[in-house]
Amino acid sequence: MNAIEVNHLSKSYADFEVLRDISFTIGVGESIAIIGSNGAGKSTLLKCLTRITEPSQGSINIFGDPILKFRTGALRRMRSSIGVVFQKHNLVPRLSVLTNVIHGDIGRLHNVSKFPLAGIRNWGQISASNRTRKKAMEALEMVSLSHLALQRADTLSGGQSQRVAIARALMQEPNMILADEPVASLDPVAANEVMSLFYDLCKNKNITLIFTSHNVEHALEYGNKVLAIKNGRLSLFKDSNSIEIKTLQAEYD
Amino acid sequence: MTDGLIDIDKKSELNNLPRRYKKISITRYFIYLALIVMVIWSFQGSQFSFEGLLDSTQYFKRFLGEAFPSIGILGENEHSITWKDTFRYTRELIETFQMAFTGTLLGIIFGFILALLSSKGLLGNSRPMRLVQETVKALILLFRTVPDLVWAIIFVMLVGLGAFAGTLTIMVDTIGFCGRFFAEEMEDVDKSPADALESCGATKLDATFAAVVPAAMPGLITTSLFAFEKAIRGSVILGLVGAGGIGMSLNALFNWMAYDRAMVIIGMIFALIFVVEQVSQYLRRKVTQNEEKRI
Image (tube, rainbow over all chains, first blue to last red; front, side, top):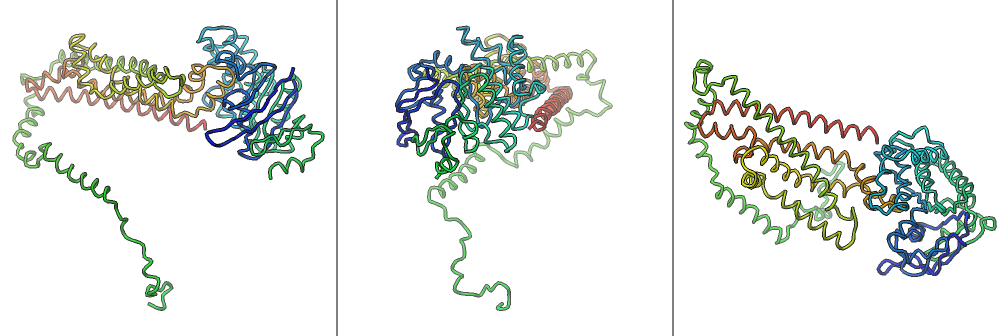
């Protein structure tokens, strides 16, 4: 079984076609870098994979499931198994680091209970179960931030806050993580740190990692394969060992 | 002027001078005209006149004379205030505060619930949900637009004279105020953290309470404090229609033309409102400063 199979995927808004006829397959545990210039359609592609954006045409199978056929409940369940990390980190600013990590576990509560308010215990760290709190501290330990557990999220540095977002994604015990320019807002040193931590965590846990980046060196270093999008079309999909940096730079012309 | 740095006599370029005034369109001209007409028309209708103000000097004198009797008369006057009266007024003042506090608290709770239900896209975007949002929005509008005195008259009719009618009035007024501004604050919050939670399997309700409400909290708190200040000011006047509090005594004293006593009550009201506003202002400043420090 493959982690992702995308067939003839297209997405258009009114008269503008963002993605055109994209097909690719990603194996379980692989790490894929998606590159392409601004507006090429990288983010839209990622959003289609969790149906935050609805594709116009084509099919997407994730771990064998045809997710475009999912209704609300199944969709939410599918999303709870996919971690998403954003360029803007998207932590809740006024809440503690620990609470933000525990938020990653809300989806699981809904998976085990049909009660619509099932998620309520994980709205804050105060009410979360002991097990969840321990798990969250463990997740923070994995990104080496457990000492900041009760600090407010808006007091963190950029690198720290993105590591918290990664911990939140890990909290979901995902089999796949999608990351949209995860280190674009960080300085080069923090960016390298976060990226290699991210890569190692995913490799160790056999999590399929798909990330977009403008940094071609990152793409080659942390992606087993590189997928390039140009004007909404798939223009390159290759093993990163067989790619030269110049080829990738050419994708930005 | 030929030896000046800037030669203003250079004839050829002078027709480039920009216009002093913008040309106004004919519609705009009529709008200005209408505004002027409205000012004149309103002044006429409102019977505002300086002569009226000046002609009433004798009434002014009488009122002031009776409202502030000279110290000598104090004590022998039929209106002189005994300790018993002082206690009664204080009790009524406390009742006013209690009405305002209870009413505001209930109003904040219900206003918050209605704000959640009326905020665009917060708890859902389906067609029935949008219908709920529009309906609740209309309800909040109704609460807000009907003046509190009108609500007071209605509630006095429904539950009888006294503080309960006043409390209900303040509650409804606060629901209208908080319902609107809470909704605005929650709509203005950056939605990306909420979207992030939804994208990892949380429901809209989870995202609202775990991400939107915490982010909007400083705004919600300051709005609540404003609502309380407004309620304290409003609660004083509710007594005029019998809805409890110190306003009832104030009304009675004016009817008996006991202006000196009325002055005492006005002084007490002033003190209450002043204290509440100062405390509330202090708390609001604390909340905002606390936020600035963090970011």
